[in-house]
Image (cartoon, rainbow, N blue to C red; front, top):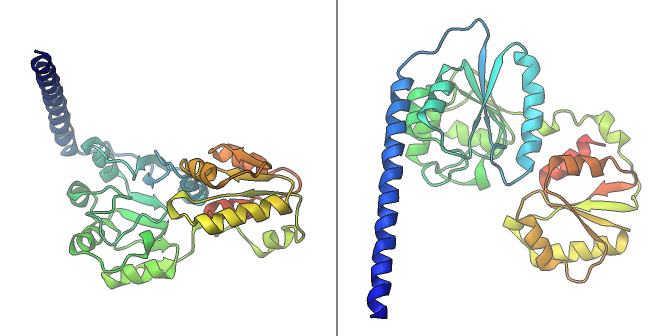
Length: 305
């Protein structure tokens, strides 16, 4: 009898789940149909230039994306100072409503990060599909973007997507020569290596002003997705011996779990919350310097002198 009751409960649970799923997909396709109709209508003309920013910092779990976006926006805004700017996510799938808005923009700028890849069909750092390809014909401009994990050969699907999406008139800015060569290899030659926009204000004068002697305290970072337990543990131990306080900024949310895994009995470790505001605040303190494994945490420290 007990077995029969359990089976009945499981059947009822499965039925409820199926009903909920059907309701979800019904609502999804209703909204999809509505959005699709709207994409066929033209936007209202404006005397102001309309600019889109494809922003990897929206919904990010890596605060480094916010550091990059901050610099991209800082340098882009003066060039389009009377333009209407709308931000769109790259790390989330966008609806046809959003694609319609992107299509109405005079240009859409990708704000940095390593979101280009050799296999768009697999890597989803930039979530684009054929809907974008159809609507955003040569309307996207790179601004300090790079290539994901230095991947090799580019798939035919990816080549077609980039050739269709990326502007064939405006010069693209990429962060390294590897990315230049990858785009050259698929016939996109209106591209130059500018480095990351976060470095554009690191002048010789700023570098000369950086203290040359060791400070009393340090701020450091770890990288959970590229662990080296032996070397990262060794780094923390050395810093713990050499500095009064070892502040660990959590640039990626999962860095904290990694810190707890390797911290051991070190007692002068101070955790800095995963916010850009918290990191900027500690960089303003006296007698502190940066040593760590996170690139853009280091660049932000350079920006702050």
